[in-house]
Amino acid sequence: MGWGLLCDGLVTVGTWASRAAPVAKFFSDMADLLM
Image (cartoon, rainbow, N blue to C red; front, side):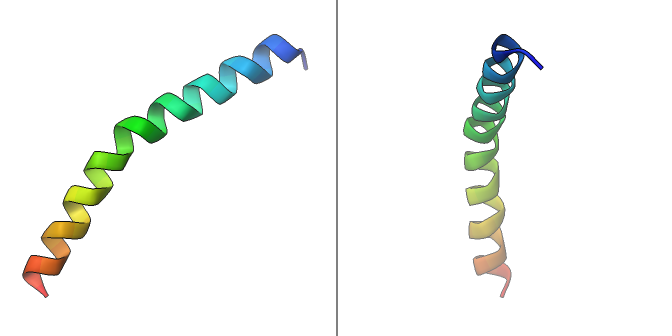
């Protein structure tokens, strides 16, 4: 396993995390409203 592949993996995970964060917050807010 090369370092390039590892770096690509970290970038991909970081990108997905930054995209998922607002979605997770939205669901969290919705859950608070429904509870």
